[in-house]
Image 1 (cartoon, rainbow, N blue to C red):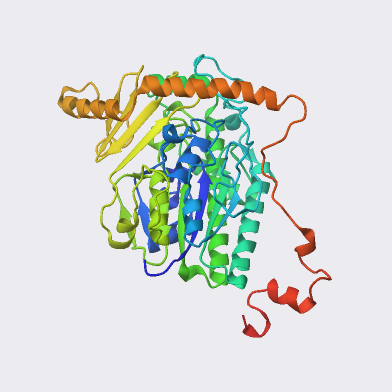
Image 2: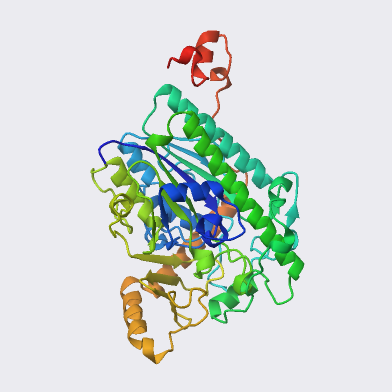
Length: 504
């Protein structure tokens, strides 16, 4: 690109594109996502690289698969020496800022961001460590169960609404400060917790939907071993929740999708009011999806599309208005941002993605596959891999039978073709590729070693005086609002846009 646009990436937590109006859902209202999709590129086969919060986000930030960076699960440290897109953008002259959640585990809570405006909503320590030595044992004190479904409904406020409201407020304020100080180009990530369970919504968003209109899931069990493990681990047994509870949970989720969309609108409005909209590339995505009762499963941790697919919408200067069917994934974000920034410096570290800019700018295919690795709770003590290419999705685990789906004829992933003689060559090719890509036994040993070390570190950190890794945003009150160290006019000009008289 001839100049460096600003970049604003807005990230949801647990947002399946299937449940948005922007991706064709007939009920769910997402007008701001739709508006961005209409003026930019909507990717219709974008995937996360690990369907769980922390590993997906670490992979997204680093442009690498989780086994390459050791970020296996929600309690695995994301090493500080691994370059992220924030490092590369900062090297290219961008101001980098994070407002909201990123679920970094470990003492580094910035990972290349120059500033972070809020704390995280989740802990930064290693307490949520799974135990692959006993994969069939449920860790009851922090595993998901069906309470989030049973308790769905309305509330005046929740900790999640408080968090997202703060993250958006701080982001909007910083956008105006960037404008007033001329701090361009800048790259900002606004990362929200909604529509992640609990499925509890404020009334104004709940009331957007009539309960009688809520579509119900197809709860026919998938029957594969991993789905059985997920159902057992989350206690999603037949009859565990009623039809009314399922309907209420989906109602709450839809409401919170609309709340997330309203926050997209607030960020876009701030960019427009600050006269930055035309110079800013806006990206909307999520860390993973939500099964939301489909196949009798809830939450994530599955390679089925409701869990593993994510929205990916890009709009802004130089971006074509189009929809794109070829698969891609979140590891492609880092090389895309590097190309947008014109960063041609030393690579720093290998990446597993490729730049999507040729697709965004010229409509040329730049990526045609998505690859993922799941190494967290409810796995069978071995990783579960996914390859999505052309019309095929292949799922491999060392101790499970393979799965092959033809998404062109079976978008609901109901028919496993791995045993179909007509697909024998396709299965054999994918199996050979999986064997070449991954050594499951070596990865298992690495994950077990990581878990063993963390089970020593965490109790030790909790013994005696504990020094928390949780991020505490710095704030200097003497530099805020009206103070005697600056004149009233200076404060007025510094904190108002446009300034009085229309002069910058």
